Image (tube, rainbow, N blue to C red; front, side):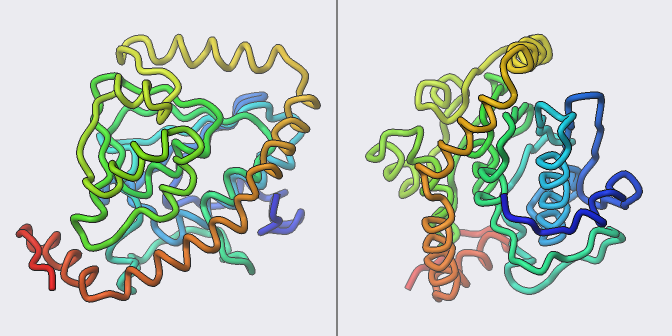
Length: 271
């Protein structure tokens, strides 16, 4: 896993101020909650820094066996912050320092050699799917809806496509990226987007059972197996290329018009 922070910084983990995450550590499980509800948990640049800090702490802490990801609010994650993409970054009081290296969400998450569980109780959009794709197991409320609306904004889900191709039939995935339609929780499970779609009342028991089964097995074997899986996929090279393609499409007139139309709540007028 890429080292974004020093051991000296990680020692003070529980003394730091997190603005966009709620952190809870209980014995051998670290739980992260995305906590930017006013912005539908859109990924703020400092949120990425906080995630990098939390995941590196998890990786280096031998007592932690499982990482759990949740989100506050009625939207799990709406993807990248569109305002931040245009250079308008909200102020914050986070004490987590900016790392020396650029944080790429996929490389960050897949660099973790410990199992991770995403518990999804709110709708997911755009780049929020990177969390679902990178976690080892995903439990979701079966009443949720899933869509990829980027092409409606003049953009394309480059990095999302790159990681979802591991689980979803490429032809099905490409069509979903192009048309951006909505699917339900059952369809998401059939495609492999999520591991299990359940009634909301069953989520906690299913999650506890999964964590129990993971912790019953060898942490060393799991760690080495996940490292092997990561090296087979070669995510770092793929994500760097896909990010460059995303930057390319973001500079087009269609992207400018798409984002403007989205903010103005009207249909875009493509050139």
